[in-house]
Amino acid sequence: MPAPSPRHCFGLRLQVGRRALAATLTIGLAACDSGPLPLPHAGAPESRQLLGQRLLAQYQCGSCHAIPGVEAARANVGPPLEAFGRRSYIAGHVPNAPDTLARWIVEPHALVPDSPMPSMGVAPDDARAMAAYLLSLR
Ligand code: HEC
Figure 1: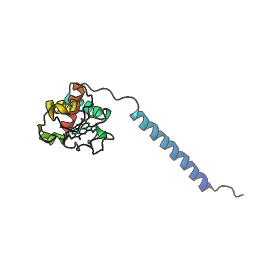
Figure 2: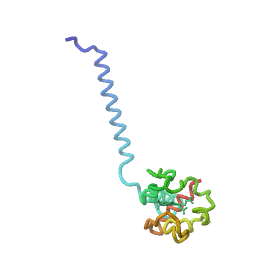
Figure 3: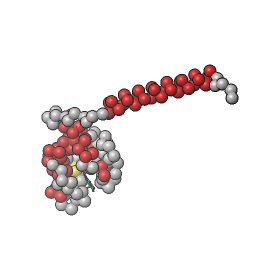
Figure 4: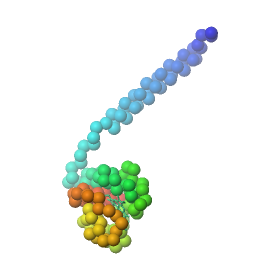
């Protein structure tokens, strides 16, 4: 049986080296990813938007809507919500503004009685944060 060539040994060492590097990278990424994100303060507009972005995922609005920036929100049962901040109307005829949008999210039927969108049991504060995020989409 021929002895392994020095080149082979070098290849092996290189591979181990790469693997070690990959492991280091994985650990590095895991470190970035670990732990819950700090809860943003509800006061500042950007933090409110961030909170809203997370709530849209939590309430699973994406099971019906495509929403940019929201994980797994790619469905098309309801209309896509991209650039929602540029929309003049909610559901075609309710003026789009922070208050009306939050109200819509809590109880769509209060604004459009025959709307197919269900009430999702959203708390009013949560709805305001989600509205802030949707209105920031341009
Ligand atoms: C079961 C499916 C479903 C779920 C879940 C759902 N929606 Fe909807 N949504 C709809 C449908 C259908 C419409 C269209 C309603 C209409 O035109 O009357 C709609 C309309 C909307 C609109 C207005 C869209 C437009 O083009 O004017 C917004 C904003 C909206 N939904 C936000 C949300 C948010 C936020 C959530 C999560 C809290 C959510 N939706 C959950 C089905 C859903």
